[in-house]
Image 1 (cartoon, helix red, strand yellow):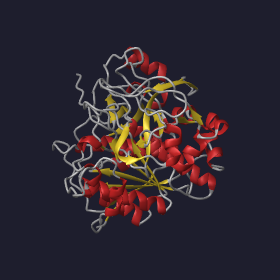
Image 2 (cartoon, helix red, strand yellow):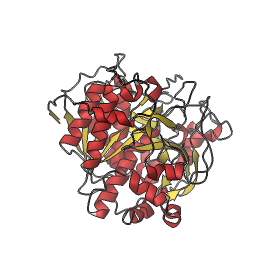
Image 3 (cartoon, one colour):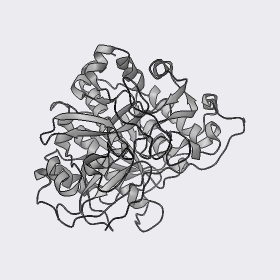
Length: 458
């Protein structure tokens, strides 16, 4: 049985069964109309109140009813041979990206914002942790606007968001296993509701880092930079920076054009106060040794991994913004006056996917192959939590530090894998990876041990 349904932010390849908070209310967010001066494209001063609807639903494929008895027995080479997909575990991801054993995010809190959530996330994270030998999840679930009723058969994307929620929680936990996770769930995926959830995180300082694995193409946002919901969100991210909170978001999974005729980035990743995470395919040995990496784009036949037996599933996002201008530190490396995504990169391809445990109603309980740039954003949030623990203070807005490292040749060569191969032209226009900063992969993917050292001085 094969059925793909392509969405914009996270992607999953379902392989079947491996193994058989509080509710609060939040006031409305007041738009900061001064943020309209950031717009570089609007031709009118009239504000637009149109709704932004964010997306995080993955394509899925159910393939196998049973697998070996223990997930830890799976190796990338075994999975490639049997399923055409390399299955990466938390231990492999930590080894591949050189996360020190001592980097656990102890004493830190990560805020994850999602819509709808998953009714089984507590037990799913517990199962995931037990199987992979991780500490118990320190997970709080918070509903600023009240808990939604989960119904995977509705056409609101609940099942896709449940996939997203599980991916976000389990892999933030994988990279920062001793950190507390505050999972903040919006009642739906509308802009006002998600803005209120984000505002709740910032106003109550629910984490030193906030990650968002969702987005909407800028081209789909009516009013562009004059859209009130976009302006509200921009004000929240500015306030987060002032409060010392790092904000991360996924750059998207449908290439530079998001399935449209022209290149455009996803918002909120295109906001200047947000660190945008682009996508790669990373190739690791069975013991996790880093071998190679290139920009994720399954449409490039020669680079679609392992024979590409399920076809072209996706590609990393990233493009110049038509709404925001670049900060000076970014334009110095990008050579563009427009804000560009991505800023950084991480493994995202479904053919080079991570294993996620799921058991919410309407799907077979078990492990799934999951990819997408929304796998990268929560793992980078874990890296930030590790950095905050190492530094002894919150690093806050991340981009100025990352681009300072990028401008220092010695520090850059040590802290990042410079991705120079591939593109994000997914059946349409796009951009190529190259030496130094590039749009599909930003500054590149992390060597976490060396990045922690570099962040202490940049």
